[in-house]
Image 1 (cartoon, rainbow, N blue to C red):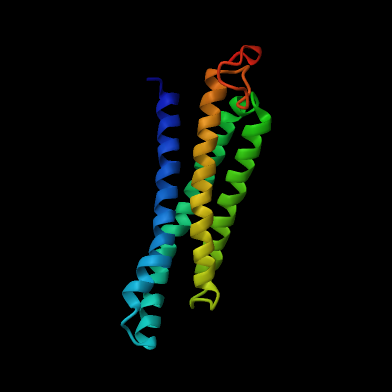
Image 2 (cartoon, rainbow, N blue to C red; image 1 turned 90 degrees about the vertical axis):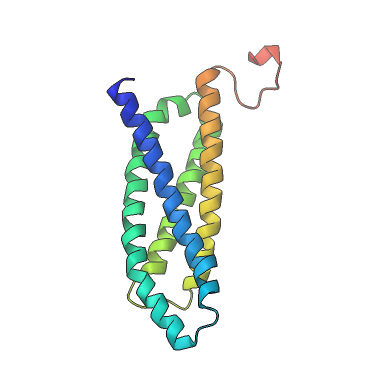
Length: 167
């Protein structure tokens, strides 16, 4: 395996791991933490939420940076393949990028400041929903990229066995 191949695999892996960690943080914030706080009085709940914010920021902020860096590298490296089927790959890439940026923005706004915002829980819910959709778009983009690599002249909408499109 060439050194560049090792770098490509490592950066793809790091991109996926960073996404998993950020989705885990959002899932914890939206689902698990509120369940754990249910039996506490409002003052104790607020103390627990304030105590969680700093460690959460220390995970989310670097995770966003890692996603941006590895995502930019992966896009640059795969762009020639995306250009083989620009209609579908550029559309899916754009959706993946915009959803990912929305997740990052929502998480940054959710964690901004010392105190939680009244709309924070709603923002965290939307971040989690958009994160799942971002993974769906990324998985679909990987499928389209692999298909473009294996069948450079065959558009993804061609029917299986359709000789006129080389399928």
